[in-house]
Length: 192
Image 1 (cartoon, rainbow, N blue to C red):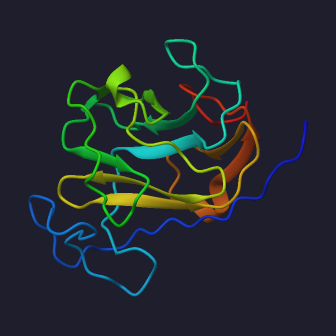
Image 2: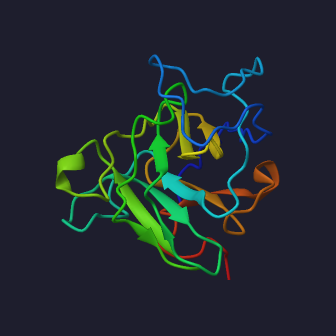
Image 3: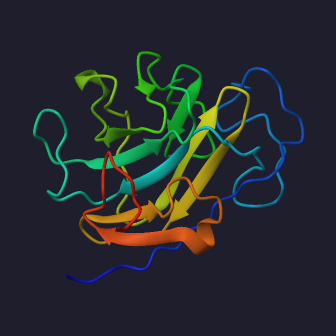
């Protein structure tokens, strides 16, 4: 099965001290939320959408719609209603969470999944992100326009090893994260 790399990760979810209807897009690095002294700011949790799984060193298990091998991030919608992604942001720079708005044409169906290519090739279409993931570790953040969101920190990863929540969108990340070779892009992470 090959070596499984141990991930170092945290999920920071806390109450936002001063929520506002629109993100503070002030100077680069400004998020408009209270700095708690942690590596990232406190944020109110998302409940309708999550980063459910990702691979930061894609070598061939998953291919995008053009047949290219890329890193990827899977979003999951655990609710009973579809979610249009206008007003959501995905970033690999938690100091600038609103740098990469998701295309408003993207929809995550009720109970469904959406896999995005983290390939730094946004000209290829709305499912291609304007950043790539770092196999040596970094942070990935999913934010909503009102500053609710989540941030995942991870350390060095192995080729095609997925960071996966089991059960999908579970909140107790310390107790529910699995490392899975290949992952399950576009489907549930629950092992049958």
